[in-house]
Amino acid sequence: MSRPTALDWSSDNCSVERTLDIIGEKWTLVVLREVFQGIRRFEDMRTRTAIPRQVLSARLARLVDGGILRRESYQEPGQRQRYQYRLTQKGIDLHPILLALMTWGDRYVADPDGPSLELYHHDCDGSVELQLTCSRGHTGLTARDVRPRPGPAARLRSA
Image (tube, rainbow, N blue to C red):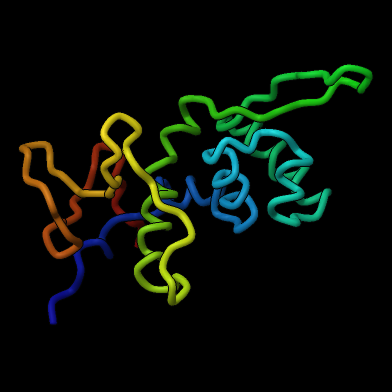
């Protein structure tokens, strides 16, 4: 068996690890799921998810600090000012990650009756699917079709 070339390179500046530092906790992904479904208010999130108040507050603050969500104030008549949370472009760009998790879950851990949520294209009502495509137009790629190679920020591992 040949030695993987990845062993020659440092993983100290890994984008996957840096992303997980921001979104890699269960409740953070649940919060993102809710915001992508249009749930933007704190109490609405608590009602749907049963996330403990302090945990939800901390996750929302982390996502705001990370530039993934932005807080917008609103005020119901006769009530104090509150905040709702909206995705920034940085947050919207996380959609394929949640779609990939959902696709895997629908395939391997969904209820016997099927998935609890389906995504569709609002213009034509077609189902939405995640698909890997290379820059030269090849579609339907799988992990077996993809190979890693060092990128511009790759650093050799120190011995």
